[in-house]
Image (cartoon, rainbow, N blue to C red):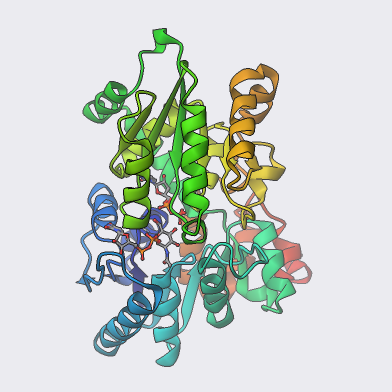
Length: 401
Ligand code: UD1
Ligand code: UDP
């Protein structure tokens, strides 16, 4: 089977590298990796640590690109690739413009599209913007829907997706995280470089990791997040560590507001291995990122989600995440509670894995390899996800006995 994997941004590369590795180990697949390079440096950072050499690189990123510009470039760029490569299937991940436009291009050529991380919904088409709608567009034309959690599968069923086409796999980000965590010990230089940015453990200072980049926060939200950080940084025992997204709407504002503050370290975007190490060393996280909301609970790190809605409520249900919006007083109050209320901190820092068990890519591979028989095979061999209720979700209970 010729399968074309299309991706363009940092989170897609992180969440797809375990799937690409699994596909490449399987001799029955001929894999074409096509990167749109909607992101450039941040994508390349992941490709290099994951040892993935793209077969096609469309090199589309432009500084401060608008949504229509990047969408139209990807739509036509991928179409040219599909015309040439003629894959049997196309695999996309998540909710980015790359995922949406690549899926649409494949649909126009009547090539089946499979969707990794299907079914996440906030219920608000403007939050996350434009990701909620991107993901729905992919969901409306996908062939296989790889839902990370039972809740995501339920959302698809409510939208009348056929249950036989939905497989609960867990999120591949947990595959990537666990694999990376295992390797961290061998990256001594990387650990040392991050340790050099952080206070000595003896200093007894608290490390707060921040990431923020969402488009819906550009209209005032980023300023409010910056004020909350400034207020938090007034505490002598706090160090805010913030790898800043290179989008000029974020980078310029954050450097202007927070640069040179003695309790704030602004860093360039980190490669995945150092970022995971930093996550493991921090006390808690302030973020509006999707992926970080999924990774932090797995490492037992409390997360304050600086958004009004989330399409990943599993972290909140598990008790590791709280939705705090972008009101500076609210963010500051919740962060102070984590700093000063020990019992509250401990309740939020129990490790949970509501998003996956590290075997999502194997399940995806199984389905791509065995097609319609895969859900049944997973059940028979006892390999159905421990996360899910596969018989109910896939409606195959009747066949099992
Ligand atoms: C994109 C995705 C978002 C995802 C995020 C992950 C869309 C609409 N948005 O948002 O869902 O959460 O990636 O980070 O698909 N830039 C660089 N170098 C890079 C990457 C970006 O300089 O390696 C700058 C460029 O000026 C670029 C701008 O950031 O034009 C915006 O990039 P873009 O991919 O359009 O949006 P993100 O905000 O990164
Ligand atoms: N990440 C990284 N370096 C950083 C910040 C984040 O490698 O400096 C990783 C993080 O571990 C997570 C992913 O990038 O897996 C999240 O990407 P981002 O926040 O850009 O996008 P989102 O998940 O919000 O779509």
